[in-house]
Amino acid sequence: MSVLYDCHMHSSFSTDSDSPAESMVRRAMDLNLKGICFTEHMDLDYPDFYFPDLSSPFVSDPKEILTEILRLRDLFRSTDPEFRILFGLEFGMQPHLGSRFSDLASAWPLDFIIASQHLVGGLDPYNPEVWEVRTHAELIRSYYEEMLANLKIMPEWDTLGHLDYIIRYIPGRGNMVFDSCEAFPDLIDEILLFLIQSGKCLEVNAAGYKHNLGQPNPAPSILRRYRELGGTRITIGSDAHTPGDIASCFDRIRELLLSLGFGYYTVFRSRIPEEYPL
Ligand SMILES: [Zn+2]
Ligand SMILES: [Zn+2]
Image 1 (spheres, protein in one colour):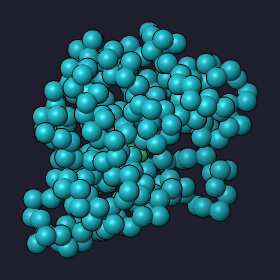
Image 2 (image 1 turned 135 degrees about the vertical axis):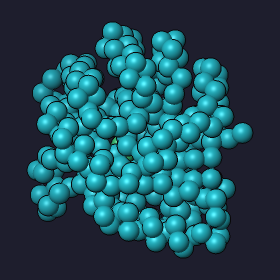
Image 3 (image 1 turned 90 degrees about the horizontal axis):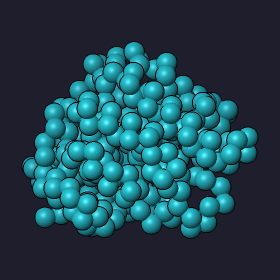
Image 4 (image 1 turned 180 degrees about the vertical axis):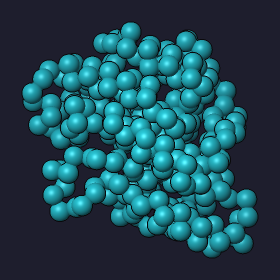
């Protein structure tokens, strides 16, 4: 088998992508995937000083997305009636957003929700100056602490997106890869146990390869620990922002997951999990 669904991608509805959703579908069909899930950004109250020219950076309009998804389902129905175009969102967690996420989840016919920690201390670690104020290890620890606290109050979500996302952006790391399991074993365990105990999935996100980590997010050491603690449920996504990145490195991810003892991955439809063999 191979991984036939890509459950994390962005199109021009997201601030950081220019790719029309239709081009993403065409590419996925060319790759003989069985389906994709659009997971446009929903980073409510993202700090606006990074994008002074935009009114709501990284906040996508669910109505526009759904309208386009319905159009694409119609358009491609005769080409491949089995191909699934799923409607998801990537919720950027912050402690005060619980009720707004819960309203969104009930207002829209979502297939899938990714809970992602994109900020630390209200700032985006993508920006190098965020790293100048504290030591790298302190900042990374805060990131995981905030993630855990936010997960506990998130009302609606299916998978935890790119758990060690922050390590992509450590300034000047070159080819060095920060080992979160080694640095914060108790904290990583707490996050993984929370996922397992609450029946949620852990996402395996291919963008780590693109960001020169040589591994997905989260790292193999975190995936191994998840298995050791009893975790079996994963989702898989490329986090593509262009058609060329759809399903990228999925063969490497599949091999890694099989070697760690995972047997299946999960795809959500109408928020209901379906399992597929790896
Ligand atoms: Zn993300
Ligand atoms: Zn994303």
